[in-house]
Structure formats: structure tokens, C-alpha cells
Length: 106
Image (tube, rainbow, N blue to C red):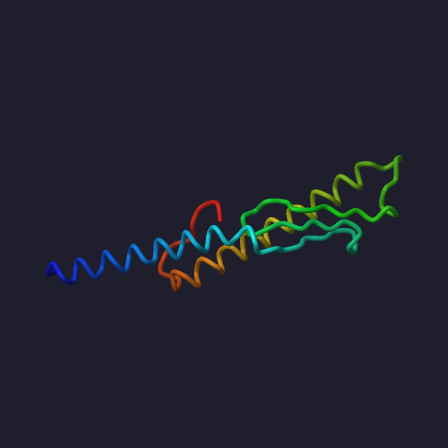
């Protein structure tokens, strides 16, 4: 490979790296939602896998059955995290064109 081709390849790699960083920085602005109990518990997260909000319908709060509420919250959080991970992978594959393997933690 000649020096010109190598330099061009390095420039493309640097631009892709910058685009990936920009996309990763933007993940905090992409919101997803998980829910459980027919929507009685909702969790809003971002594609950076941070929980932004939890909404619980007062009807599901039963002091005699706190385990049910705990299970619903856990299910909604897990659903939101799966959606966040999928959305992050979609964003990254738009940048990389599917050329890179799945990035751990995303």
C-alpha cells in the first residue's frame, strides 16, 4: 500500500471515529420506554442506558403486596434497557455501516 492510500485510510478511520464519538454523545438524547402491568409501570430511559423517569400508576400500589410492584418495576426497567441497547446498536450501525462488531456495553 502506498503512502497516499495509507494516509487516505487513516483520514477515513479518523472521520469514522469522530462520527462514532458524536453518535455515542447523542445517545443521551434518544429516549425509549419500557412498561409492565399493562402500562401501570412505565420506565423512560435513554439509549445510553440511563433511567430517566419511572411512572407508577397509584392503582398498582398495594401496601400488602409490595413484591408485585417490585416485580413490575424490574420488568419495566429490563424492557427499557433492552430497548435502549437495541436503539444504541441501531445508531452505531448507521455510522459503521455494520462493518464493526457489536460494541460491548451498547
